[in-house]
Length: 456
Image (cartoon, rainbow, N blue to C red):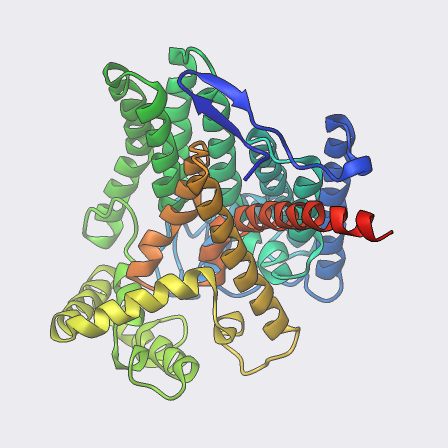
């Protein structure tokens, strides 16, 4: 498959790029078209938000941001009166908390500002992804097609314009794609100095603080660069930089948690709730998985269930999650075959979410859910088929993309997928799928055209 730049020995070689015949674009023109499409996509998301979607959505991240802004500290993940928490990573609610402190919780100005933040991260991630494709030698029309699909197809407007005001998904995707782009550029250098290596370590530490799932992917991408281009003698320094940055935040965070929750918690306490939602009878023996998921959510989440809320307040957050972890562990030990069935389904549903995940807490099947679901599944299938083709053609620099697309799924295979978890790979899959589609169309056109010429 053409249109790639691969490394033979130590020297990069151009292998060509698919064009659209007489419609070939200069790189400068293509870049401006890409920017225009991203800006059009940003306008689409802003219009959607202003058309009745400006109000904040209740969630753990929103509640903690509200508590921070109103001076009650990192608290109230499950609503007013639920007290100090470590349910989320310490960085997750900070952007929203800052905006709410300055502009008022839930005010139109605050929500519009946070929408601009979310949409900016979305647009930035699309641009970074397009630059990744350019770095791999993908032609202009394939890049433009991918950007148009990612920017203008209204697949997940609610996530991009609303949920990501308080959740980290768009920022995490931007950081992942930026790391991927940096590594691809460094991979072409004859020599990689200490400065970029230490910078990668710092960036990886930052990514971990924003999203450990994204950090699994960035660690894989950086690790691949190190294996290909960096002497093992130089590996420890960037790793130590990353560890130092993470420790500088998580050690004080853990000490804070020990003081207010009674236990040193370096990351977050919510694993018990996640495991309880992931492993139970309703995940394998059910006629309606959505109904059973909602039922289980009400049983174990203080956000949704009154009995769970009362027990959470009685025993405290740490003990509450410890009990749920023990319950989930006992279920896994009693149902080992079901555990693997659940994880296999999680893998499929991470990349091709079923319809019920699009409307998890409602029975509404409007808003083109089936069409959006099919588009997402098609982009995943086309993206991975494209990866198989380029790797079969020994275009090894695409291993970086493979790592960025595969590794983010690992923690969610172990629990359960959600659309906002999948966002880490969404844009990149669309761009890779567009490349595969344009390459296939170009190949078919080149095969058909001689026959057409002979018949005229």
